[in-house]
Length: 120
Image 1: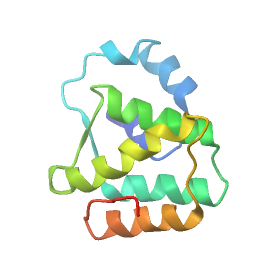
Image 2: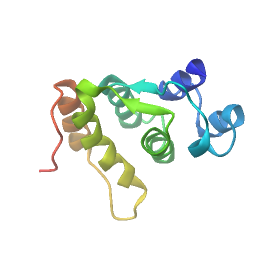
Image 3: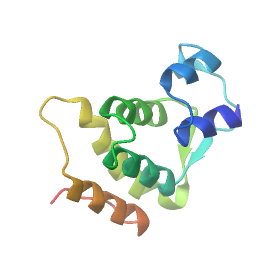
Image 4: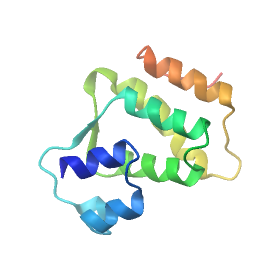
């Protein structure tokens, strides 16, 4: 299972492929040890989105799986920084929410420095 979850984190597989491997109900998959999510994983995700290598839907799918399932857990040392960014990225599927490239870069800077991101 480690490889499947790692591939999802690194965007080597998408939500559809993850469900094909683990089942449609990702919220009830039994997992002994959740995959660790590091700030670098979120930085990679944001960079892929900024460079238009993934879509808005792909970023939202990734965030929803990482945040709302038991398959993943945040690295404890970076937990507050990760949570501050991921909670905002989760809102990207709302009609009136969007972030500028500068805001995304500010998120990356906070993640890189293990700081909590606050919208200015």
